[in-house]
Amino acid sequence: MDGVDYAALRLSLWEDPGPRSEVTAWVEGRIAERGGALLPVPPRVRVRPWSTTARFATSLGTVWFKAGAPGADFEAALAGALHAWAPGRVLTPVAVDAKRGWALLPDGGPPLVDLLGRPRDLGLWESVLRAYAQLQRVLALRVRDMLALGVPDLRPRRLGTLLDELLSDRGVSERLGRDREGVETFRPEFERMRARLAASPVPMSLDHSDLNMGNVFLLEGGYRFMDWGDASVAHPFTSLLVPLRFAASEYGAAPAELERLRDAYLEPWSDRGSMAELREEAQAALRLGPVSRAMAWGRVFPELRPQVERARDASMAAWLRTLATGELGVPFRDG
Image 1 (cartoon, rainbow, N blue to C red):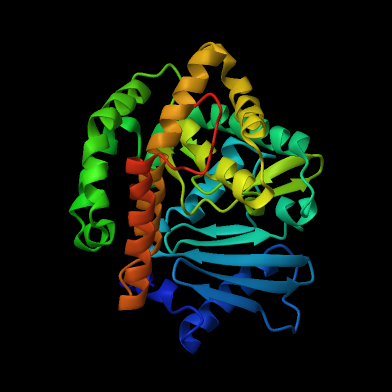
Image 2: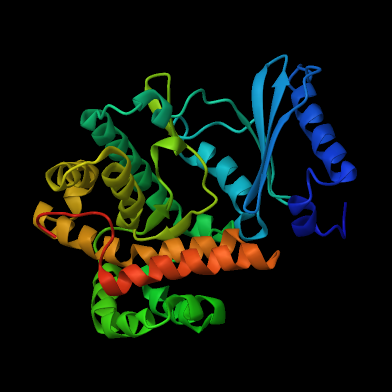
């Protein structure tokens, strides 16, 4: 398929019979290689601006096809590499086509968000965050490999340049309005925190950037992490922003409970500093985390049509606004 515009193909996978048939044939071929076959059941498809997913029923069990947006086309290759680098900590892909950004994954069962329900189990949350931190420790040895796969580079030394790029985006700047002045006022503190994280004894690693309980599965006594389309190479503590916000907003976790979750995550990093030092570093990573979230929105919402662009710009601006306000939705008592 040399010369094919794979970006356009991904966005029209289920809107055009040709690409749809090609995906089905690819899935069928990968299942056949394993001695299975597709069942005569129409796939369950979900098309969104940032990805196309399809659930296929096969004689070997349910499988999920995923193709990300052009800005997240590294995800398929990363999914295959993570399985090799950290077996037993991510879902094992059935197949990967890195060139086209396609991945075929097994069914992981219900995610933890469905298993948890409304009752809170802080012990479970703590164990998930510890397991995720341990995964990051393993992946800290693979920074060059991840960058070679095209994983975005959001390490602290680049955050100043990236913030400038975001502020120079006309749509984002218009959405910020007067709050842009607040971001500029925060800039000296931003640079101080950025420099601290850049000089940190904590090694850079993979930041999932959207680690919520919908992206975690419990299989064979261990946690499996998935959905890496928002990921980047960054200071690892940046990953705390989303799960702590999720715990506060969805489950009403109090400040003391959020601190308990944060400390559980920091325990695997205890050889890199005292708990007080790690907490201060986590606070800096949380304050700068909105830059990573804004960049992720920019990547997964390509310029498709005006309404999508407006949604993207509004979300990017909303994250940048928290740089000025400090209102991250993570109300620590000691922060």
